[in-house]
Every structure is written in structure tokens, then in C-alpha cells.
Image (tube, rainbow, N blue to C red; front, side, top):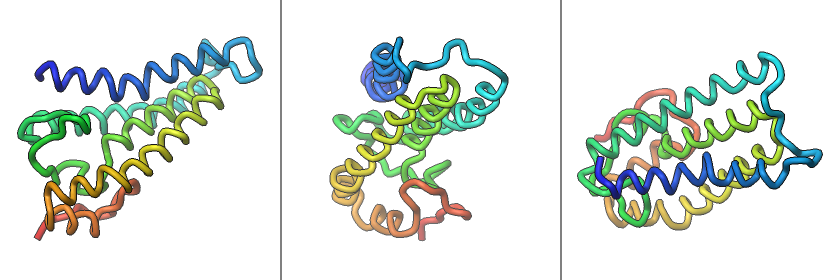
Length: 168
């Protein structure tokens, strides 16, 4: 993994999963919205472990695909990968990397019993949906043409297909 790739990981998931949540937790401490730390009871752990693990798996899998099959570039929009990837979780949904981030954000808010972190997750989801619709998807259509448009028609943005997509 080169420095550009590592920098993209530190900036993008770092901001969504560490920097903003840390700021939210800091600004809500000593309020009625403060996180519960350390978490009380097994429910926090049990409720957070499944979305947290699912998020880590999706994020790790997609980052690995970008590194091994992307043909250069990074997961960041300012230095996109060169090859269109339709393997692994991309056969089931168009945005598994961001879905992984959302799962992990959900795990953070469940684990810490934090409504402000849940609100951050919802805001992040809405912001990315708007970005995908108006910026990323048109850019992918321009870069990859008919192959991406066919993929887009068959593969949902967020909810997975029941069967894997197979390009014709």
C-alpha cells in the first residue's frame, strides 16, 4: 500500500469513524446526551459486535479490492481507482465500503448509547447519498460508460441484491 492510499484511508474513514465521533463525544460530555463510557451491561457489547464486525469486514474487503484490482488510485474521490470493480461485495451492492462505514458508525452509537453519534450516522448517510447521486455516480458513468450504467441498473446503491450480479 502506497502513501496516497494510506492517506486516503486516514482522511476518509478516519474522519467518519474517529475524528467526528470524538468531537461529538467531546462536545456532548457533561450534557444529557453524553455517551455512556464504559458501557453498562452485556447488551452494549452484544448489540455493537455484529454491526461492528460486519462493518470491519466490508471495509477491509473493499479496501483490499481497491488495492489489488483498482489499477492504481485510491478510495478517495480526488484520486480514484482506474479499473471498474465488480467482484466481491460489489456484486451485491454499489457502495459496500460506505455501508461498512455506516455499520461501524452504528456500532459506535450502540456501544456508547449515544444519540448524537446515531444522528451523525444518519447525517453521514444522507450526505453520502446526495454526493453519490449528484457527483460520484455521474462521474462513474462518464469514466466507465455502458458497463457502469448496466451495473447501476441491476445493483442497488445500499441494500444488497439476493443474487450476485454477473456482467453480460
